[in-house]
Image (cartoon, helix red, strand yellow):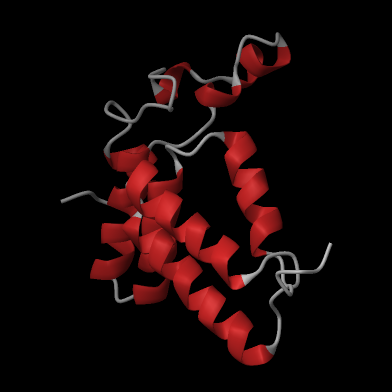
Length: 136
């Protein structure tokens, strides 16, 4: 069971997405330009551990947010930006949102995020926030 704060109780096991150990990610390396984005990106496992800590403490909504974030760690950054634009109200029609949900679920193995997008599509539909399929 992970303990909180993780950087105190599990510092020896924490790594960035690059595989670099947390205790080797330093301000000095940042100042010298020796870090990449992957050196400061949290891993999927760290987010899942944080979700479990939140869930155990009774913070269900925070746990769900952390689980969605964990799923998104495998999605390329440019795809995340594209998803952001697709999800903005009035930018997509229902079919485009369903296609995004399918891509999340089947290509990125992100079922929680896929369900979130499906729910958003349904809300957008009810509230008239979808782009009409014939609109430019």
